[in-house]
Length: 308
Ligand code: GLU
Image (cartoon, rainbow, N blue to C red):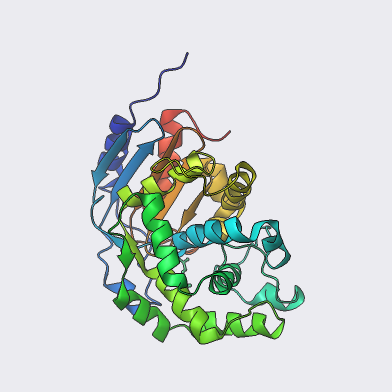
């Protein structure tokens, strides 16, 4: 039988090699508060389903998880809405940037997938349909999957994004004209900008993806949050759509389903085995962390494991 690799040694080596790299790419600046973040942060956390964890670098500093939050909202809404969700949002890679409007008109207001902004807005809109206090509901879900009661929203980031939300508002209004947004756009933007502002560190993020490593059952509580089939579907969406128009290249290089955010976080996982989170804020032109992706590519190469 194959013994498991020494994950601690592997991430130590990768950190040592890559920390000296020049940070190519740039920190997201279309949300002004995100532009204040030091591009030199770098941290890696691994959590195994067997209960071991390994950390190196800036793994305790919280940052804005941005689009990684789309995974949590999707999990929560999918759990409530079930397969009906796919009437309002597709599951094909878009091949377009995360905030693109282009396909929405020809596809009658049905976004390609829940990981681009248009699709995530539809999912968050359904959260508003279900819960009196959607922000609180999402927060308690994230606290529960990350096993950290201190996870919270960053009000400064949420306010900064709200002030600069013209593009996302345009997407929401456009889809509302097709009947695919049910709530007032102001209320939707408030919930969406808060969800993007969730602050977590790599330790929290690696822990929070254990529910997917464990096929839908939260290992921290034993509660089943997604059915087996839902966990499979969510993983498939992450594999094909988690990195916007770089999803194919990410799958090719890394071989794990995962999700990135413009705050520089990246999380990925191998079912039954482990989840890994990386934070490095400098982004490539697709809006994904340059060092984050390089780290994950080296990780699966060095451990000789992936989903394939
Ligand atoms: N809050 C960001 C937006 O909607 C999320 C984008 C991302 O992380 O990719 O523009």
